[in-house]
Amino acid sequence: MKGVVLRPRRGVWPFSGYFSGSRKQICWAGCVGNGVDPRADWALSQQFRRQLSGLSELSGDKKAAVATFLAVLTNDVMREFDGANLSVLVAAWDEAGVAVSGFGCSKIIGMSHPGASEVWLEGNHPLLSRPGWPESSLGAFVVPTAPEWLVGVVAPEDDAWRGVLSGDVLTACGVVL
Image: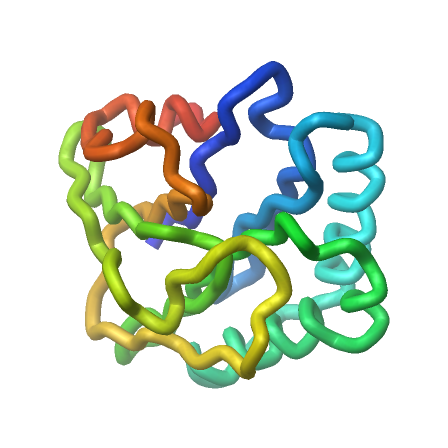
C-alpha cells in the first residue's frame, strides 16, 4: 500500500484544511474546516497535525494500529475543536491484510496504478458518512489485499466528481508520482 488521499474540495482553496501523515504501517489523510477561510482552516488542521504527530511507530496488528489512531484523533481534547466538516480516511496493514476506517467520505476509490481505478466502497456502509465527528465508535473494514492507493471522496459528492475513475484522480488529489 502506498497511501491514502482525499479528493480536494471545489473552489478557490481546494486543499484548505488538509492534513496527512504516515508511520511504518499506517497512513492517513484528513480535511477539516469549511473551505472558505484558508487561514482558519490551516489553524484548525494544524491542531490535528500536532495531535497526530505524537503517534509513535505503531506496532502490532492493523486493527490495533487503526484503533490507536482513532483514539488519538477522537479524544476529548480534539473534540473541543470544530469538527463539523471533518473527514478522515486511514489505512493500516500487516502481513495478513489491510484495515481501513474513517468518516466523512461518501465513496472510496481504489487505484492499483494510475489509470486503473475502481469504486472500492460505496453505498450504505458504516464507514461512509457525512463529514463531522462520528456519532458512534468506529470499526475497521478488513481485507486481505488492497489497492496501492485509496482515495476518499468527501461528502457531499459534487457532480464534477461523480463517476470519475481515471488516471487523473491522483493528480487531482495533489499526488505527484
